[in-house]
Image (cartoon, helix red, strand yellow):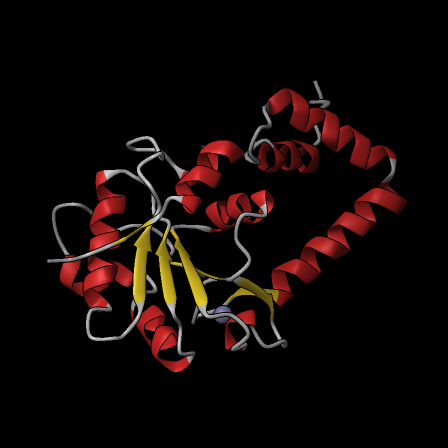
Length: 202
Ligand SMILES: [Zn+2]
């Protein structure tokens, strides 16, 4: 007996159900919608996805996403503040609140709390130090999470910047311990920013 399942459709459902917030059921509905408007929606999505895949890259200097043949915002000397976050989601969260309007630096993760601190673990820390030097930055705001790893990372960065004349601040402790910036409400984030304090390494 022939199987009425179409492999291509099953594959599509499988991929789409990996997207955040989608289970198999929602993925099936999306795939159905796509197939029902194949010349419009499906074609458009295919082209848009292919273009984004080819043209959206992560800046090797600051970690922000950019269009492949355009200069990254980090080359601008417009801002004298850099807010350091762990990942893109954290940046979007802070941007959405409108609390802060300087530039960003995306580390790409945090350091483990116990080992490998000296290497920087592939995080964009050296390039942060270079940016601070090159763009005469006045303040580096460390907005890593309040977890042990987030604290370890903040201290490591602060240590890496100790020979440069720059103010280093850390978000206030209003951020719950272990709290991920991405999941904070606007009020908590606003007060954590407003009440940020200067970090000393000694
Ligand atoms: Zn950049």
